[in-house]
Length: 259
Image (cartoon, rainbow, N blue to C red; front, side, top):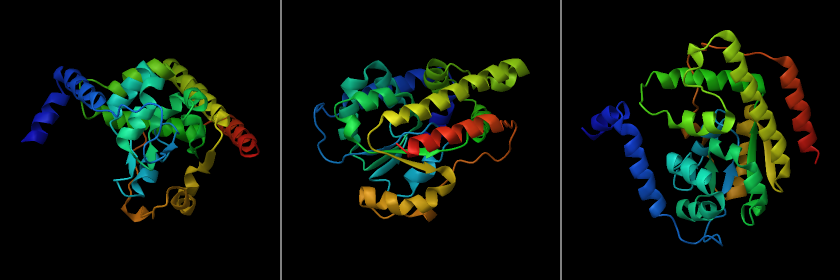
């Protein structure tokens, strides 16, 4: 019954109000400590959405590893005041590993924050053309759920990246190309900015499985990849190809790996 009620609310104007109320309650319960890490020094996977973050987080026990925890509340609070909420959120969740796509918008803040700059980060690498294809097809699937408030589109893709993905398939070819161009600009800029981080591990998405022993050593936990899942689109309604940008990305990655 509760699931059915929630499903109904998500498809009505009550959706936004409901998640706003929930977010305020979550933030109110955040740890008050904002100057020190109380327990776990969380390792963050900071790559954008659709880069294998679901799989990586799912390889470890949910008690110490999470994929996009308290997602809406996190995006809202980080956008309002990063410095005020970063450590409070870290202490509240008390995770060893977190994979959340929204961190990709806050590399400058992470690199300059007194505590965050000393933490360890994972940057999962995926060729830009493949990434664009995956993200756009993911949004094709999301639209099918008919939720009333596509908040990730409003707060991340529109506000930060500058694109409207929820209506991508309603635009003409030129408008779609403009969206793709902005996505690529964000993706390349994000990747370049990761070079500002002191402690970052770069791993190609195709090598995530072989990277798990390193991840085990970093967090002191055993990986169980067989229990993890991957968010794969079943049908590709849009395919983007651009060897030039893919080659540019590889050159950028090589320069970062030789820092």
